[in-house]
Image 1 (cartoon, rainbow, N blue to C red):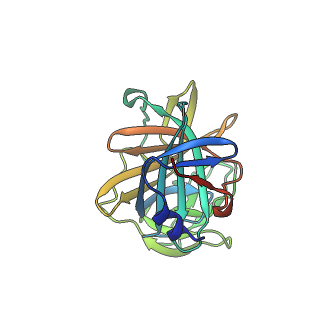
Image 2 (image 1 turned 90 degrees about the vertical axis):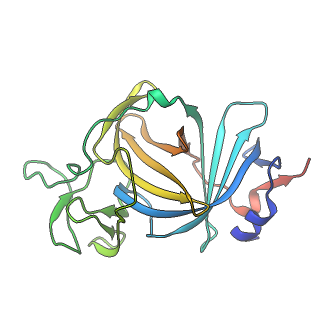
Image 3 (image 1 turned 180 degrees about the vertical axis):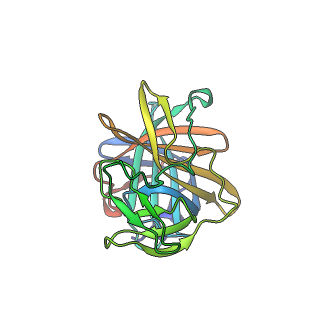
Length: 231
């Protein structure tokens, strides 16, 4: 099976079993990355397409979101819970995040577009994709030196960005990366990668005013390992 086959086969109400837990499909759609700010430890390409499957635990409260890369078929799965709107409060300017501080002990990157230097924000894994805080270029860092792969669109709106900090689920988090997403070609959404030195990473996703905080499954399920059961 490939990603498109999985997308075509899933329907609302189907039950998917992952790691022994049964989830019911709530929604199947397509998404496209339209912007990125900050730094993330994964490869993100401008205009990247993916299949998005939203699921809810059967007789439970957990939610799962699975993103399937259209080109590679790779599946990334995240499990979490809904977060009330009024609890999502982050403060800080994304334009200040990553601007070079000569006194800071951090990795310095030179933008492949404008040539300006900036710092990598502290986080647990190696940064693979970043945006320049000076010119908004999107850079591939997988080979070490920055390589220009795109430019953020002015229409890619994110209510808060890298460097912003806030309290959530009893801990203080810093936004290290954020992506603007367009669902089914018309519905805007956003995803934020949060970092806490003791807690590690937390993903915070927003769509139509609804927020979900989730953690990545240690090993995302392969397509061959996903069991689809019709009711």
